[in-house]
Structure formats: C-alpha cells, structure tokens
Length: 215
Image 1 (cartoon, rainbow, N blue to C red):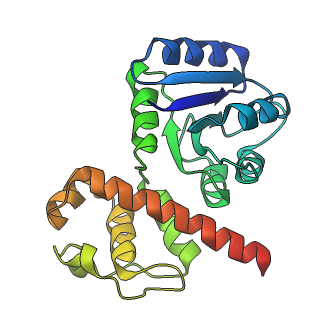
Image 2 (image 1 turned 60 degrees about the vertical axis):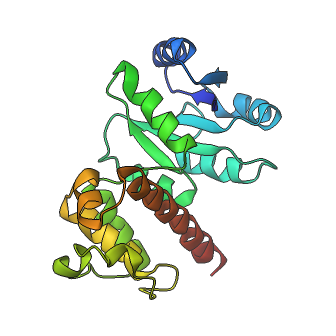
C-alpha cells in the first residue's frame, strides 16, 4: 500500500483531494500541506512513498520540490498534478526529478489510478512530451516502420549518450500519437510493460539533467 503526501496550491483543492484519498482503498495518506517550506521537514520524517504535488505552490514550484526531495535520505517519487499536460513547466519538472504526472480533471478514480501506477514504477507520456524528450536526448525519431516491428523493444544498441534504440523507438511511437495499448499490441508486450519502460525513460531524463548541471 503506497503512502502519499499531498501538496496543493489552494485550500479548497487540498481538502477535496484529501477527502478523495482518505476514502480510497489501497492508499494511505501520510500528510498534506499547501506550503512546501512547512511540509519539507514532515516529508523527511514520514518518508512517504510518493509526494503528489501541484506544479505551482504558494511558496515553491515543482522544479524546487523535485530538487529538495532528491536531497532527502529516502527520496519519495514525485507525482505532478496539473490541469493540463500542455503546461510548459511540466516537462522541465519531469526532467528535474519528477517521476510522472496526472492530469487532474476532478474525477474520483483518476488520481488513485495514477498513484497506483507510479507506485508500480509505471508512467505515461503524451505526444508533445515524447517529442520534447527526443529533443532533450538529442536524437531523431526512428523510421516508423522500424519502430513498429515486434523486435523494436529488443534493440539495445546505443541511440545516444544515455538512451538505447528501443527507447528511441518507444518515444517515436508515442510522439506519433499511438496509444499505449496500440504499442503493446505491435510489440507483443503487456501495456504495463510499456508504462514501465516510460518510467525508466523519465529516470534517464533525470540523469541527463544532472549531467547538464555538472557540465
């Protein structure tokens, strides 16, 4: 059962989401706050599995949240809460250390599903984010006919400094707008395995981001 710490910008949204998580099966709410500075020590003490945070808080933005969580002895995974996947800060925060995102449309089951998915180390990327990831890794899209082959997920030859060809093929299909279930069918894999591969790709974005800071 994942433990979750909640960070939300407005008190109304915070209370609504608290109520949702307290009623959800299979999730334990460790704590909640609207101000990151007040929450950080408590997060360090409670060591939740996941911190679910708005992209913007009263006293912080998601990049700072990702950075500070990365300095903790036990780093929780970071789930970004956003009303739209088109926010320009979303990809920056994913690169800075966030692990996944959830488009908060107010539905009861959506957030619980996103938390459960992340706890299982699974994630998703929409087409615009996949295109940004290709650009961030400095690679072009694969030929579509190659990316669609059942052998594509087995191609471990390098595609760039941090990424292999199978990851390039996956980003190509995501950028093209294919659904996860469609990719799973083409590659003869479970949809959950595609989501796990995306989670690992986001982790590679963290490595790239740290290398750029060092450079």
